[in-house]
Length: 254
Image 1 (cartoon, rainbow, N blue to C red):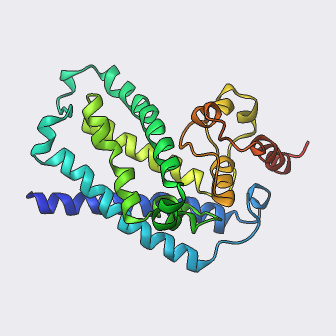
Image 2 (cartoon, one colour; image 1 turned 120 degrees about the horizontal axis):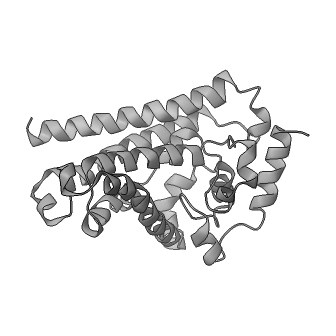
């Protein structure tokens, strides 16, 4: 397989993965169980078909751009300057597994500060506004970026590969988990189980309510996976817990 064929193959895999994961969440929440999940809807207004078409268009363009940068760093001579490895025997299986959450921790830090940068007024207007056109996000808005933002988002893979050793399995697992969490954050429904609120995980992890508030208010709650950077930098919306509890009371009336 030559480089062009490999790039095309990787691009199609990424696009199909985006359509499948976003589509399944949309099918379940917006169509099949729409009535039974009504109490879990974060914003009560409907997402228009026009918005969904726009989100899918920008997401497909972003998929091509992000795949190209990942392809460039992993499948060309640039890879020799990174810590990419292909033999699992080079590092332990334990490291292969552990490198995924470590990568997510680094990614969350990178994403938080990139996100804050994108919210500077001049940059927001010309770049990040494309994503924030989805002020009532749907699962399809997870990759809906301006071209420059798509490049910024994709640079996390080269960054990780220059910082820590990563096997392709770890990279593809990391990008899959990232997409699933991203789709959940843009879902428009809060589907976290009832026990989550009283778990220690609630103080660590973001929820769909968390990121939805960012889209509806255009500021605050900048983190991707975790709450800690927003809490350290005092950018967490003070009404987050109140709104989360309100939705969960509607979902699970006592």
